[in-house]
Amino acid sequence: MKNATVAVLAVSVAVGGLFAGQWWGARRHAAPSSEGAIASAAPAARKVLYYRNPMGLPDTSAVPKKDPMGMDYIPVYQGNEAEGASAAGQLRISADKVQKLGVRMEVAALRPLGRVVRASGRVEPDERRVYAVTAKFEGYVERLHVNATGQPVSRGQALFEVYSPELVSAQREYAIAVQGMRSLANAGGDAAAGMKQLAEASLLRLRNWDLPADQLEALARTGETRRSVTFRSPVGGIITEKKALQGMRFLPGETLYQVTDLGSVWVIADVFEQDIGLMKPGARASVRINAYPDKAFAGTVTYVYPTLKAETRTIPVRIELPNPGQLLKPAMYAQVELPAADARPVLAVPDSAVIDSGTRRIVLVQLGEGRFEPREVRLGARGDSYVQVLEGVREGEQVVVAANFLIDAESNLKAAIGALGGHAGHGAPAASPASAPAPAAAPAGAAAGHQGEGIIEGIEARAGTVSLAHGPIATLKWPAMTMDFKVANPSLLQGLKGGARLQFEFVERGQGEWVITRISPAAPSSPAPATPPAAHSRH
Image 1 (cartoon, rainbow, N blue to C red):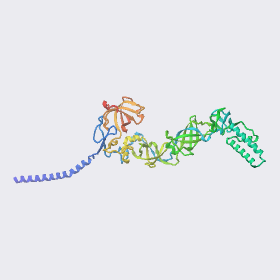
Image 2: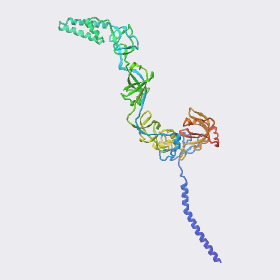
Image 3: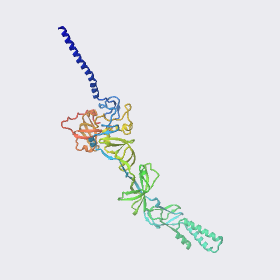
Protein backbone atom coordinates (compact mmCIF):
# COMPACT_ATOMS: atom_id res chain seq x y z
CA MET A 1 0.00 0.00 0.00
CA LYS A 2 2.85 2.30 0.93
CA ASN A 3 4.64 1.55 -2.37
CA ALA A 4 1.50 2.35 -4.39
CA THR A 5 1.11 5.71 -2.70
CA VAL A 6 4.72 6.61 -3.49
CA ALA A 7 4.23 5.62 -7.14
CA VAL A 8 1.12 7.83 -7.47
CA LEU A 9 2.98 10.78 -5.99
CA ALA A 10 5.89 10.28 -8.36
CA VAL A 11 3.58 10.21 -11.38
CA SER A 12 1.82 13.38 -10.17
CA VAL A 13 5.11 15.23 -9.75
CA ALA A 14 6.24 14.16 -13.22
CA VAL A 15 3.00 15.31 -14.85
CA GLY A 16 3.09 18.60 -12.94
CA GLY A 17 6.70 19.17 -14.00
CA LEU A 18 5.79 18.51 -17.60
CA PHE A 19 2.95 21.05 -17.53
CA ALA A 20 5.16 23.54 -15.66
CA GLY A 21 7.91 23.17 -18.27
CA GLN A 22 5.43 23.74 -21.10
CA TRP A 23 3.98 26.81 -19.34
CA TRP A 24 7.44 28.23 -18.67
CA GLY A 25 8.54 27.70 -22.28
CA ALA A 26 5.39 29.37 -23.58
CA ARG A 27 5.96 32.18 -21.15
CA ARG A 28 9.54 32.69 -22.34
CA HIS A 29 8.48 32.74 -26.00
CA ALA A 30 5.52 35.03 -25.43
CA ALA A 31 7.32 37.57 -23.28
CA PRO A 32 9.58 39.08 -25.99
CA SER A 33 6.76 39.44 -28.50
CA SER A 34 4.54 41.07 -25.89
CA GLU A 35 7.28 43.40 -24.82
CA GLY A 36 7.99 44.17 -28.48
CA ALA A 37 4.32 44.97 -29.06
CA ILE A 38 4.28 47.26 -26.07
CA ALA A 39 7.51 48.91 -27.18
CA SER A 40 6.22 49.37 -30.73
CA ALA A 41 2.97 50.85 -29.46
CA ALA A 42 4.78 53.38 -27.28
CA PRO A 43 5.32 56.67 -29.15
CA ALA A 44 8.89 57.81 -29.70
CA ALA A 45 9.81 60.61 -27.33
CA ARG A 46 10.38 63.97 -29.04
CA LYS A 47 13.36 66.15 -28.14
CA VAL A 48 12.53 69.63 -26.85
CA LEU A 49 14.78 72.23 -28.43
CA TYR A 50 13.66 75.21 -26.33
CA TYR A 51 10.58 76.95 -24.96
CA ARG A 52 9.10 80.05 -26.58
CA ASN A 53 7.03 82.89 -25.21
CA PRO A 54 3.28 82.07 -25.32
CA MET A 55 2.41 85.59 -26.53
CA GLY A 56 4.80 85.41 -29.50
CA LEU A 57 7.41 87.74 -28.04
CA PRO A 58 11.06 87.17 -29.07
CA ASP A 59 11.94 85.48 -25.77
CA THR A 60 13.01 81.85 -25.34
CA SER A 61 14.18 79.63 -22.53
CA ALA A 62 16.18 76.41 -22.35
CA VAL A 63 14.05 75.17 -19.40
CA PRO A 64 10.29 75.29 -18.71
CA LYS A 65 9.09 78.53 -17.12
CA LYS A 66 6.16 80.94 -16.92
CA ASP A 67 5.77 84.46 -18.22
CA PRO A 68 4.92 87.40 -15.91
CA MET A 69 1.19 86.60 -16.33
CA GLY A 70 1.66 83.00 -15.24
CA MET A 71 1.28 81.37 -18.66
CA ASP A 72 3.53 78.41 -19.46
CA TYR A 73 6.14 78.79 -22.19
CA ILE A 74 5.37 76.60 -25.23
CA PRO A 75 7.82 73.76 -26.04
CA VAL A 76 9.39 73.70 -29.51
CA TYR A 77 10.32 70.18 -30.62
CA GLN A 78 13.04 68.97 -32.90
CA GLY A 79 11.77 68.38 -36.44
CA ASN A 80 8.78 70.68 -35.93
CA GLU A 81 7.16 71.50 -39.28
CA ALA A 82 4.18 73.39 -40.53
CA GLU A 83 0.73 71.90 -40.26
CA GLY A 84 0.87 68.38 -41.71
CA ALA A 85 3.94 69.15 -43.82
CA SER A 86 4.58 66.24 -46.10
CA ALA A 87 8.14 67.21 -46.97
CA ALA A 88 10.81 69.57 -45.81
CA GLY A 89 10.01 73.16 -46.66
CA GLN A 90 6.38 72.45 -47.63
CA LEU A 91 3.13 73.59 -46.07
CA ARG A 92 -0.10 71.61 -45.87
CA ILE A 93 -3.38 73.34 -45.10
CA SER A 94 -6.75 71.65 -45.05
CA ALA A 95 -9.20 72.43 -47.84
CA ASP A 96 -11.71 74.06 -45.49
CA LYS A 97 -9.04 76.41 -44.16
CA VAL A 98 -7.97 77.29 -47.71
CA GLN A 99 -11.57 78.17 -48.50
CA LYS A 100 -12.07 80.04 -45.25
CA LEU A 101 -8.93 82.14 -45.72
CA GLY A 102 -9.96 83.10 -49.26
CA VAL A 103 -6.80 81.78 -50.89
CA ARG A 104 -6.65 82.61 -54.59
CA MET A 105 -4.13 81.33 -57.13
CA GLU A 106 -2.91 82.47 -60.53
CA VAL A 107 -0.67 80.84 -63.13
CA ALA A 108 2.87 82.12 -63.65
CA ALA A 109 2.92 82.79 -67.39
CA LEU A 110 4.79 84.62 -70.14
CA ARG A 111 3.31 88.06 -70.70
CA PRO A 112 4.49 91.52 -71.76
CA LEU A 113 4.88 93.86 -68.82
CA GLY A 114 2.58 96.74 -69.61
CA ARG A 115 3.46 99.77 -67.55
CA VAL A 116 2.77 103.48 -67.56
CA VAL A 117 5.22 105.78 -65.80
CA ARG A 118 3.37 108.72 -64.30
CA ALA A 119 5.14 111.94 -63.39
CA SER A 120 4.37 115.54 -62.64
CA GLY A 121 5.76 118.31 -64.81
CA ARG A 122 5.50 121.91 -65.83
CA VAL A 123 5.12 123.74 -69.12
CA GLU A 124 8.15 125.75 -70.20
CA PRO A 125 8.88 127.70 -73.39
CA ASP A 126 11.09 126.11 -76.01
CA GLU A 127 14.48 127.66 -75.28
CA ARG A 128 15.31 127.54 -78.98
CA ARG A 129 12.38 129.86 -79.69
CA VAL A 130 13.29 132.62 -77.24
CA TYR A 131 14.82 135.76 -78.82
CA ALA A 132 16.42 138.79 -77.18
CA VAL A 133 16.29 142.20 -78.90
CA THR A 134 19.43 144.21 -78.10
CA ALA A 135 21.38 147.18 -79.50
CA LYS A 136 25.11 147.00 -80.32
CA PHE A 137 25.65 150.70 -79.87
CA GLU A 138 24.86 153.30 -77.26
CA GLY A 139 21.76 155.43 -77.67
CA TYR A 140 18.34 156.55 -76.44
CA VAL A 141 14.82 155.12 -76.85
CA GLU A 142 12.81 157.71 -78.72
CA ARG A 143 9.54 155.89 -79.35
CA LEU A 144 7.86 152.60 -78.33
CA HIS A 145 5.58 150.81 -80.79
CA VAL A 146 5.00 147.84 -78.44
CA ASN A 147 4.71 149.00 -74.85
CA ALA A 148 3.29 146.05 -72.82
CA THR A 149 4.56 142.68 -71.68
CA GLY A 150 2.47 139.78 -73.01
CA GLN A 151 1.50 141.64 -76.17
CA PRO A 152 1.50 139.40 -79.27
CA VAL A 153 3.68 140.50 -82.16
CA SER A 154 4.30 139.24 -85.68
CA ARG A 155 7.57 138.72 -87.46
CA GLY A 156 9.00 142.05 -88.70
CA GLN A 157 6.63 144.19 -86.61
CA ALA A 158 8.18 147.47 -85.36
CA LEU A 159 9.03 147.37 -81.65
CA PHE A 160 10.74 150.72 -80.92
CA GLU A 161 12.86 153.53 -82.43
CA VAL A 162 16.22 154.72 -81.11
CA TYR A 163 18.52 157.72 -81.59
CA SER A 164 22.28 157.33 -81.37
CA PRO A 165 24.81 160.11 -82.09
CA GLU A 166 27.37 157.41 -82.79
CA LEU A 167 25.08 155.82 -85.34
CA VAL A 168 24.36 159.13 -87.08
CA SER A 169 28.11 159.83 -87.32
CA ALA A 170 28.77 156.39 -88.81
CA GLN A 171 26.04 156.95 -91.41
CA ARG A 172 27.57 160.31 -92.34
CA GLU A 173 31.01 158.75 -92.76
CA TYR A 174 29.59 156.12 -95.07
CA ALA A 175 27.71 158.67 -97.18
CA ILE A 176 30.87 160.81 -97.62
CA ALA A 177 32.94 157.71 -98.54
CA VAL A 178 30.37 156.74 -101.19
CA GLN A 179 30.40 160.25 -102.68
CA GLY A 180 34.19 160.31 -102.72
CA MET A 181 34.34 156.91 -104.37
CA ARG A 182 32.01 158.14 -107.11
CA SER A 183 34.07 161.31 -107.64
CA LEU A 184 37.31 159.33 -108.01
CA ALA A 185 35.79 156.58 -110.11
CA ASN A 186 37.57 157.79 -113.32
CA ALA A 187 40.71 158.96 -111.61
CA GLY A 188 42.18 155.56 -110.93
CA GLY A 189 45.30 155.02 -108.91
CA ASP A 190 45.77 154.76 -105.17
CA ALA A 191 43.30 157.55 -104.33
CA ALA A 192 40.33 155.70 -105.83
CA ALA A 193 41.34 152.43 -104.18
CA GLY A 194 41.75 154.11 -100.80
CA MET A 195 38.36 155.79 -101.02
CA LYS A 196 36.74 152.46 -101.94
CA GLN A 197 38.29 150.77 -98.92
CA LEU A 198 37.00 153.57 -96.66
CA ALA A 199 33.46 153.17 -98.04
CA GLU A 200 33.55 149.39 -97.56
CA ALA A 201 34.80 149.75 -93.95
CA SER A 202 32.01 152.23 -93.12
CA LEU A 203 29.40 149.93 -94.67
CA LEU A 204 30.70 146.92 -92.73
CA ARG A 205 30.49 148.90 -89.49
CA LEU A 206 26.83 149.76 -90.13
CA ARG A 207 26.03 146.17 -91.05
CA ASN A 208 27.62 144.95 -87.82
CA TRP A 209 25.26 147.27 -85.97
CA ASP A 210 22.33 145.45 -87.65
CA LEU A 211 21.03 148.37 -89.71
CA PRO A 212 18.40 147.15 -92.19
CA ALA A 213 19.59 146.55 -95.74
CA ASP A 214 16.93 148.82 -97.27
CA GLN A 215 18.09 151.70 -95.07
CA LEU A 216 21.72 151.17 -96.14
CA GLU A 217 20.69 151.17 -99.83
CA ALA A 218 18.76 154.39 -99.38
CA LEU A 219 21.72 155.95 -97.58
CA ALA A 220 24.12 155.00 -100.41
CA ARG A 221 21.70 156.22 -103.07
CA THR A 222 20.62 159.53 -101.58
CA GLY A 223 23.40 160.27 -99.08
CA GLU A 224 20.82 161.36 -96.49
CA THR A 225 21.30 160.11 -92.94
CA ARG A 226 18.39 159.19 -90.70
CA ARG A 227 18.28 160.42 -87.14
CA SER A 228 16.52 157.34 -85.72
CA VAL A 229 16.59 153.62 -86.43
CA THR A 230 13.61 151.25 -86.05
CA PHE A 231 14.08 147.84 -84.35
CA ARG A 232 11.71 145.08 -85.47
CA SER A 233 10.63 141.72 -84.00
CA PRO A 234 12.78 138.83 -85.27
CA VAL A 235 9.93 136.28 -84.84
CA GLY A 236 6.21 136.06 -84.29
CA GLY A 237 5.34 135.42 -80.65
CA ILE A 238 4.68 137.03 -77.29
CA ILE A 239 6.59 139.82 -75.55
CA THR A 240 7.75 137.95 -72.45
CA GLU A 241 10.12 140.65 -71.22
CA LYS A 242 10.18 144.40 -71.81
CA LYS A 243 12.86 146.61 -70.29
CA ALA A 244 12.72 149.49 -72.76
CA LEU A 245 11.14 152.72 -71.56
CA GLN A 246 10.55 155.77 -73.70
CA GLY A 247 13.40 158.25 -73.32
CA MET A 248 15.73 155.84 -71.51
CA ARG A 249 19.43 155.56 -72.32
CA PHE A 250 20.80 152.13 -73.16
CA LEU A 251 24.26 150.65 -73.50
CA PRO A 252 25.63 148.17 -76.05
CA GLY A 253 24.46 144.60 -75.37
CA GLU A 254 21.62 145.58 -73.03
CA THR A 255 18.44 143.49 -73.58
CA LEU A 256 15.51 145.78 -74.34
CA TYR A 257 12.88 143.21 -75.38
CA GLN A 258 12.44 139.42 -75.22
CA VAL A 259 10.14 137.72 -77.72
CA THR A 260 9.06 134.07 -77.28
CA ASP A 261 7.48 131.88 -79.92
CA LEU A 262 4.92 129.65 -78.11
CA GLY A 263 3.90 127.68 -81.19
CA SER A 264 5.79 124.73 -79.67
CA VAL A 265 6.53 124.26 -75.96
CA TRP A 266 8.33 121.89 -73.61
CA VAL A 267 7.00 119.93 -70.68
CA ILE A 268 9.72 119.10 -68.15
CA ALA A 269 8.62 115.95 -66.29
CA ASP A 270 10.31 114.90 -63.05
CA VAL A 271 10.72 111.10 -63.34
CA PHE A 272 11.84 109.09 -60.31
CA GLU A 273 15.23 107.47 -60.64
CA GLN A 274 13.90 103.88 -60.49
CA ASP A 275 11.92 104.57 -63.70
CA ILE A 276 14.56 106.47 -65.62
CA GLY A 277 15.86 103.32 -67.32
CA LEU A 278 12.53 103.04 -69.16
CA MET A 279 12.79 106.52 -70.70
CA LYS A 280 13.97 106.56 -74.31
CA PRO A 281 14.15 109.56 -76.71
CA GLY A 282 11.44 109.30 -79.33
CA ALA A 283 8.89 107.66 -77.01
CA ARG A 284 5.36 109.01 -77.07
CA ALA A 285 3.88 110.81 -74.08
CA SER A 286 0.44 112.00 -73.02
CA VAL A 287 0.10 115.30 -71.18
CA ARG A 288 -2.94 116.51 -69.28
CA ILE A 289 -3.48 120.00 -67.88
CA ASN A 290 -5.83 120.83 -65.03
CA ALA A 291 -7.21 123.76 -67.00
CA TYR A 292 -8.40 121.43 -69.78
CA PRO A 293 -9.49 118.17 -68.11
CA ASP A 294 -11.17 116.91 -71.28
CA LYS A 295 -8.05 117.29 -73.46
CA ALA A 296 -4.96 115.12 -73.78
CA PHE A 297 -1.95 116.63 -75.53
CA ALA A 298 0.37 114.26 -77.40
CA GLY A 299 4.10 114.86 -77.26
CA THR A 300 7.45 113.17 -77.81
CA VAL A 301 10.33 112.56 -75.42
CA THR A 302 13.27 114.45 -76.92
CA TYR A 303 15.85 114.47 -74.14
CA VAL A 304 16.65 112.80 -70.81
CA TYR A 305 18.77 115.15 -68.72
CA PRO A 306 22.06 113.74 -67.38
CA THR A 307 21.66 115.18 -63.87
CA LEU A 308 19.59 114.12 -60.86
CA LYS A 309 17.92 116.38 -58.33
CA ALA A 310 19.21 115.21 -54.95
CA GLU A 311 16.31 116.81 -53.06
CA THR A 312 13.57 114.88 -54.88
CA ARG A 313 15.57 111.95 -56.35
CA THR A 314 14.11 112.74 -59.77
CA ILE A 315 15.61 113.28 -63.23
CA PRO A 316 14.11 115.83 -65.65
CA VAL A 317 12.76 114.46 -68.93
CA ARG A 318 11.99 116.87 -71.74
CA ILE A 319 8.81 116.37 -73.77
CA GLU A 320 8.22 118.49 -76.84
CA LEU A 321 4.70 119.09 -78.09
CA PRO A 322 2.94 121.51 -80.44
CA ASN A 323 0.83 124.26 -78.95
CA PRO A 324 -1.94 125.16 -81.38
CA GLY A 325 -4.00 128.07 -80.20
CA GLN A 326 -1.41 128.64 -77.45
CA LEU A 327 -3.54 126.77 -74.90
CA LEU A 328 -0.43 125.70 -73.02
CA LYS A 329 0.98 128.55 -70.99
CA PRO A 330 4.48 128.57 -69.46
CA ALA A 331 4.57 127.49 -65.78
CA MET A 332 1.33 125.49 -66.06
CA TYR A 333 1.23 122.29 -63.97
CA ALA A 334 1.06 119.09 -66.03
CA GLN A 335 0.38 115.40 -65.41
CA VAL A 336 2.46 113.21 -67.72
CA GLU A 337 1.91 109.57 -68.67
CA LEU A 338 4.79 107.77 -70.35
CA PRO A 339 3.96 104.27 -71.65
CA ALA A 340 6.94 102.02 -71.02
CA ALA A 341 5.66 98.63 -72.17
CA ASP A 342 8.14 96.00 -73.34
CA ALA A 343 6.83 93.99 -76.27
CA ARG A 344 8.91 90.95 -75.29
CA PRO A 345 6.94 88.46 -73.13
CA VAL A 346 8.64 87.54 -69.85
CA LEU A 347 7.76 85.12 -67.05
CA ALA A 348 5.73 87.19 -64.61
CA VAL A 349 3.50 86.78 -61.56
CA PRO A 350 1.11 89.28 -59.94
CA ASP A 351 2.93 91.65 -57.61
CA SER A 352 0.56 90.60 -54.81
CA ALA A 353 2.10 87.10 -54.95
CA VAL A 354 5.47 88.35 -53.65
CA ILE A 355 6.10 88.49 -49.90
CA ASP A 356 8.93 91.00 -49.56
CA SER A 357 10.77 91.06 -46.24
CA GLY A 358 13.29 93.64 -47.44
CA THR A 359 16.10 91.11 -47.77
CA ARG A 360 14.27 88.16 -49.34
CA ARG A 361 11.38 87.78 -51.78
CA ILE A 362 9.16 84.74 -51.24
CA VAL A 363 6.42 83.28 -53.46
CA LEU A 364 4.03 80.52 -52.33
CA VAL A 365 3.72 77.86 -55.04
CA GLN A 366 0.81 75.38 -54.95
CA LEU A 367 2.08 71.81 -55.33
CA GLY A 368 -1.27 70.08 -54.93
CA GLU A 369 -4.55 70.23 -53.06
CA GLY A 370 -3.75 72.11 -49.85
CA ARG A 371 0.03 71.76 -50.35
CA PHE A 372 2.20 74.85 -50.75
CA GLU A 373 5.91 75.46 -51.06
CA PRO A 374 7.56 78.79 -50.19
CA ARG A 375 10.29 79.67 -52.69
CA GLU A 376 12.79 82.46 -52.71
CA VAL A 377 12.67 84.28 -56.05
CA ARG A 378 14.82 86.78 -57.91
CA LEU A 379 12.78 89.57 -59.47
CA GLY A 380 13.34 91.67 -62.57
CA ALA A 381 11.33 94.44 -64.18
CA ARG A 382 8.02 95.56 -62.73
CA GLY A 383 4.80 96.40 -64.52
CA ASP A 384 1.60 98.02 -63.30
CA SER A 385 0.23 94.75 -61.87
CA TYR A 386 2.89 92.12 -62.57
CA VAL A 387 6.55 91.59 -61.77
CA GLN A 388 9.10 89.59 -63.75
CA VAL A 389 10.52 86.46 -62.08
CA LEU A 390 14.07 85.59 -63.11
CA GLU A 391 14.54 82.61 -60.77
CA GLY A 392 12.45 80.50 -58.42
CA VAL A 393 9.22 79.86 -60.35
CA ARG A 394 8.59 77.97 -63.59
CA GLU A 395 6.03 78.72 -66.26
CA GLY A 396 2.66 77.11 -65.61
CA GLU A 397 3.01 76.82 -61.81
CA GLN A 398 0.21 78.09 -59.60
CA VAL A 399 1.19 80.87 -57.19
CA VAL A 400 -0.84 82.29 -54.29
CA VAL A 401 -1.94 85.87 -55.00
CA ALA A 402 -4.39 86.43 -52.12
CA ALA A 403 -4.34 85.64 -48.38
CA ASN A 404 -0.55 85.17 -48.37
CA PHE A 405 -0.17 86.66 -44.91
CA LEU A 406 -2.93 84.45 -43.54
CA ILE A 407 -1.22 81.33 -44.88
CA ASP A 408 1.91 82.66 -43.21
CA ALA A 409 0.06 82.86 -39.91
CA GLU A 410 -1.92 79.63 -40.28
CA SER A 411 1.04 77.44 -41.10
CA ASN A 412 3.93 79.28 -39.45
CA LEU A 413 5.61 79.96 -42.75
CA LYS A 414 8.78 81.01 -41.01
CA ALA A 415 9.56 77.44 -39.99
CA ALA A 416 9.14 76.14 -43.55
CA ILE A 417 11.18 78.96 -45.05
CA GLY A 418 13.98 78.11 -42.66
CA ALA A 419 14.53 74.89 -44.61
CA LEU A 420 15.28 76.91 -47.74
CA GLY A 421 18.60 78.28 -46.57
CA GLY A 422 19.10 77.95 -42.84
CA HIS A 423 16.71 80.82 -41.99
CA ALA A 424 13.98 80.64 -39.43
CA GLY A 425 12.10 83.63 -40.69
CA HIS A 426 11.77 85.96 -43.62
CA GLY A 427 15.34 86.99 -43.89
CA ALA A 428 16.23 86.25 -40.24
CA PRO A 429 19.01 83.80 -39.34
CA ALA A 430 18.00 80.36 -38.13
CA ALA A 431 18.09 80.08 -34.38
CA SER A 432 19.62 77.39 -32.22
CA PRO A 433 18.87 76.43 -28.62
CA ALA A 434 21.98 78.26 -27.46
CA SER A 435 21.11 81.50 -29.25
CA ALA A 436 17.80 83.32 -29.12
CA PRO A 437 15.75 81.45 -31.74
CA ALA A 438 12.83 82.83 -33.67
CA PRO A 439 9.32 81.59 -32.83
CA ALA A 440 8.71 78.21 -34.43
CA ALA A 441 5.64 76.27 -35.47
CA ALA A 442 3.23 74.65 -33.10
CA PRO A 443 3.91 71.01 -32.18
CA ALA A 444 3.32 68.55 -34.95
CA GLY A 445 -0.25 67.39 -35.16
CA ALA A 446 -1.63 70.50 -33.44
CA ALA A 447 -4.23 72.61 -35.22
CA ALA A 448 -2.90 75.83 -36.69
CA GLY A 449 -5.96 77.78 -35.54
CA HIS A 450 -6.88 78.21 -31.88
CA GLN A 451 -10.45 78.10 -30.57
CA GLY A 452 -11.96 79.95 -27.67
CA GLU A 453 -15.16 81.34 -26.22
CA GLY A 454 -15.66 84.82 -24.84
CA ILE A 455 -17.86 87.85 -24.26
CA ILE A 456 -17.58 91.02 -26.32
CA GLU A 457 -16.44 94.01 -24.24
CA GLY A 458 -15.82 96.50 -27.03
CA ILE A 459 -15.71 96.87 -30.83
CA GLU A 460 -13.53 99.28 -32.87
CA ALA A 461 -14.93 99.02 -36.39
CA ARG A 462 -12.50 101.54 -37.90
CA ALA A 463 -9.47 99.78 -36.47
CA GLY A 464 -10.93 96.35 -37.22
CA THR A 465 -10.48 95.12 -33.64
CA VAL A 466 -12.69 93.54 -30.98
CA SER A 467 -12.04 93.26 -27.25
CA LEU A 468 -12.98 89.87 -25.79
CA ALA A 469 -13.09 88.58 -22.24
CA HIS A 470 -12.32 84.97 -23.12
CA GLY A 471 -11.89 81.79 -21.16
CA PRO A 472 -8.75 79.65 -21.07
CA ILE A 473 -7.18 78.73 -24.43
CA ALA A 474 -6.00 75.13 -24.06
CA THR A 475 -3.84 75.02 -27.21
CA LEU A 476 -1.79 78.00 -26.02
CA LYS A 477 -2.10 77.28 -22.26
CA TRP A 478 -3.53 80.76 -21.77
CA PRO A 479 -5.58 81.53 -18.67
CA ALA A 480 -8.81 83.47 -18.86
CA MET A 481 -8.14 87.12 -19.72
CA THR A 482 -9.38 90.17 -21.58
CA MET A 483 -7.47 91.18 -24.72
CA ASP A 484 -7.87 92.82 -28.11
CA PHE A 485 -7.99 90.83 -31.35
CA LYS A 486 -7.83 91.96 -34.97
CA VAL A 487 -10.26 90.48 -37.49
CA ALA A 488 -9.17 89.03 -40.83
CA ASN A 489 -12.17 90.61 -42.57
CA PRO A 490 -14.24 93.63 -41.45
CA SER A 491 -17.40 91.70 -42.36
CA LEU A 492 -16.82 89.53 -39.28
CA LEU A 493 -17.79 92.49 -37.08
CA GLN A 494 -21.18 92.95 -38.72
CA GLY A 495 -24.06 92.26 -36.37
CA LEU A 496 -21.88 92.00 -33.26
CA LYS A 497 -22.88 93.86 -30.11
CA GLY A 498 -21.26 94.42 -26.77
CA GLY A 499 -22.02 91.76 -24.16
CA ALA A 500 -22.71 89.03 -26.73
CA ARG A 501 -21.21 85.60 -26.04
CA LEU A 502 -19.54 83.89 -28.98
CA GLN A 503 -17.14 81.20 -30.11
CA PHE A 504 -14.17 82.25 -32.18
CA GLU A 505 -11.11 80.88 -33.95
CA PHE A 506 -7.90 82.86 -34.29
CA VAL A 507 -4.34 82.59 -35.60
CA GLU A 508 -1.03 84.33 -34.96
CA ARG A 509 -0.25 86.53 -37.95
CA GLY A 510 2.90 88.08 -36.47
CA GLN A 511 4.70 88.19 -33.18
CA GLY A 512 2.10 89.18 -30.62
CA GLU A 513 -0.53 89.89 -33.33
CA TRP A 514 -3.59 87.64 -33.05
CA VAL A 515 -6.20 87.64 -35.83
CA ILE A 516 -9.72 86.21 -35.63
CA THR A 517 -10.66 84.21 -38.73
CA ARG A 518 -14.08 82.85 -37.67
CA ILE A 519 -16.85 84.00 -35.32
CA SER A 520 -20.04 82.12 -34.43
CA PRO A 521 -22.65 82.45 -31.65
CA ALA A 522 -21.88 80.38 -28.55
CA ALA A 523 -24.00 77.29 -27.98
CA PRO A 524 -26.86 77.98 -25.53
CA SER A 525 -25.82 75.11 -23.27
CA SER A 526 -22.13 76.10 -23.09
CA PRO A 527 -21.05 77.68 -19.82
CA ALA A 528 -19.99 81.31 -19.69
CA PRO A 529 -16.23 81.85 -19.85
CA ALA A 530 -14.44 82.29 -16.58
CA THR A 531 -14.07 85.86 -15.39
CA PRO A 532 -10.50 86.89 -16.24
CA PRO A 533 -8.33 87.99 -13.35
CA ALA A 534 -7.65 91.70 -13.09
CA ALA A 535 -3.95 91.11 -13.60
CA HIS A 536 -4.59 89.55 -17.02
CA SER A 537 -6.75 92.29 -18.48
CA ARG A 538 -5.99 94.23 -21.68
CA HIS A 539 -2.92 92.80 -23.34
